[in-house]
Length: 165
Image (cartoon, rainbow, N blue to C red):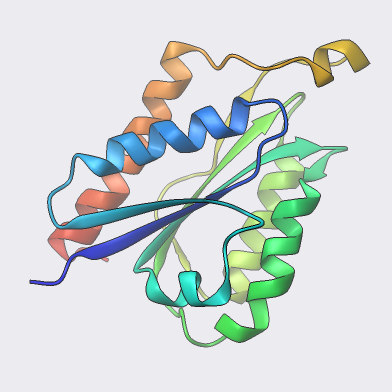
């Protein structure tokens, strides 16, 4: 049996989103029959997207929006993958300084355009970073939040392995 591939694409400037993406990858990595690919957004290409069976997209909230390098990933990959991913499962992670809702909406709109199937609500982890110093400071995501990221990765991988999606 050929393994299913879960592609996790992320961008992180202060480490918070990277921790979240890594936790999702760790959770997914425990599932037999699922290969996990963890790629920084600048490295992810259309062929990576097309070769995957499911996705986790992880971005920080920057200026009430998804990070520019995540947007660049979608800009580069959107049309080459359009109408070729229909029905594949995805989930999203947002590391936010405030509410993260706009970044989540942007990710969801792009995924809807790709006709992906959202299999879990977007997980938003709020760091409450509001000052320039706090925003620029390296982030440390809490144990409970990382556990939720691991569970999301594990659930998505289990669904892929079982053929649920």
